[in-house]
Length: 157
Image (cartoon, rainbow, N blue to C red; front, side, top):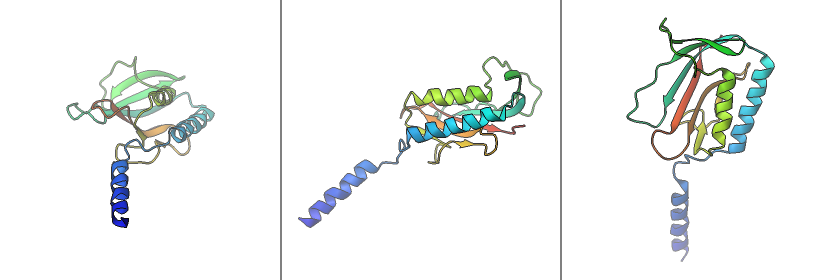
């Protein structure tokens, strides 16, 4: 009898274990985003540049999207180039750091199955230690393909 109970308990653990794709605390993620957004606001930066990279994190057929160098003045995007080039891009939809924070908070309402630093990293989204801007995060809305996004912000100055 003891052996049967052990087998049932192990089967229960295996069925519940999975790969913990959705094992994150939504409130903890939200608190981290809000705390870093406050840090960002307190920095009072309105002029800055950075490289923005957005990849579809779970879409095996999608091509990798090119990184963009974005310049912001007075909290408005004033120029966008393919990273490392002088090729100008349309900047109507290029995000400011505040726009990225807004998108992060908005995505929480969709109750994503993953909201982490990266696809295979279970830690919270990463933020710059001194200024608080998001440096890397991965959001997966569901178990379906092509609904996840990995965002990286680099070369901030």
